[in-house]
Length: 205
Length: 360
Image (cartoon, rainbow over all chains, first blue to last red; front, side, top):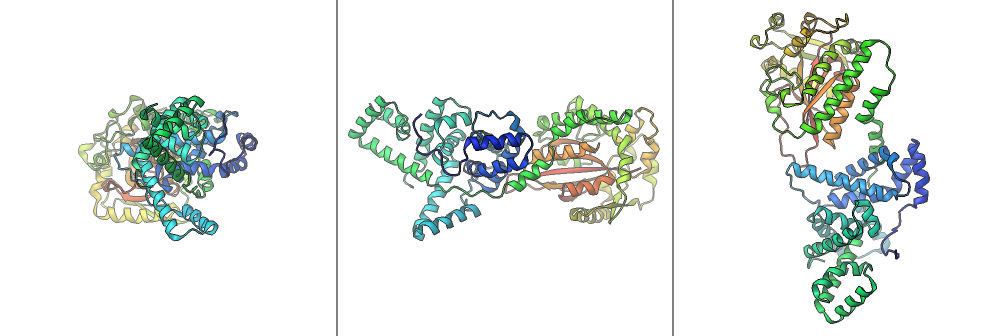
């Protein structure tokens, strides 16, 4: 497969480093598992946040995902990538959570105010690094909210594939593995999802 | 190539996943088609914006994860019941087996009937009994549940007497004293065919019996205040609380073990008090499972009629420990209003009805 332009983002841990920690965690070494959590929490939390649009929900889901991962470590296949496995657990939990909401016929309000502490911190770091004008910052923040809101209006599958590919930067193959879809489905879904999202964002970007 | 095909391929095109010949064809089309070029530009713009989304800094997840891992999940508790070595004495073994059966019944119940919204708090307010008091006049009937659950409920009800009384008594040694007043239900005679219950009903109006507990949970203190205040003027609310289940159950032939209190012994105690509490939780189902596991490990008994509603019988002496474990807002007695909905957030609570079984 050709090199992926957006894959292998910084912060991702190497599979070989994971392997040793996984082996230790499987033997009940909680500290090794903590290491794994620290290495992957950013990804898991980000996926949950983009899927659900709420920091509280995302925190809940991310914690639950790691708890399930720990309990299910025995069934984890060593040749698979841990991050992909974690993402697949997270996606399932997100889907269940949404269904749970739907069962109660609650209107899912996309948290447009997604500027929790973490994002503010990220924003501050950005100010320190690049010192963009306040106007530019405001514009960017608005844009982010618009995108988040538009994302929440997509079909579940469309949102999944956009989050994984265009926000998290996973390769097609990884998405196929995480979601359990054939590669062809990933391609066609992504194409469809991008068209949908583009239509919803039309003129706002 | 026409525009429709071109638009479909743009996604793969920007990701460089098109086969070389398709790519060349699309390139050629883009040269001559302004609208497809625009679509491509718009798509690239959107992808840039998506990629520029900040990577959110996660909150501290480890403490929550550790907390969750400290609590053994219910299936582990269940497994332990099977795997742990049991003391040779028969009652122990029977207890463990029956509790396990009850737990299995619950595990079947929770998902199957968890979303049955027809069985509501309201029915309890009508003076009905908790669901596990199967044959009573309650509007919450076990007939709505599986026969297996009924069997489990019965078995478990009996268990309470066999062992937990003794254990509850042992645990009720007070250190810090909180006063808990349980109302002695003035059992309506029409409800009962058992003569002995009259004795209960005829007991002095000051049928408020003081018991002391050890507890440090602030929520239990406030609960106790609330319960006391409520009972002052609302004895009627409690008077419907059926004692029938215990009385009937006491009639059921048992193994004839001496540790089992007789019907009279049971009835000399105050009847079951029923209080409700609302426990705010992140995940109601998981929380319910946690409560069930906790109670199950103590040979108490719980049954769920709704995802948000658990009925739990527990020896009165276990109450402080329970409140400490599951701190929640106590709503009051059986007449307490159910939590008002719709909540602004997706519902995050479990309503727990506690039926306090007296300590002999």
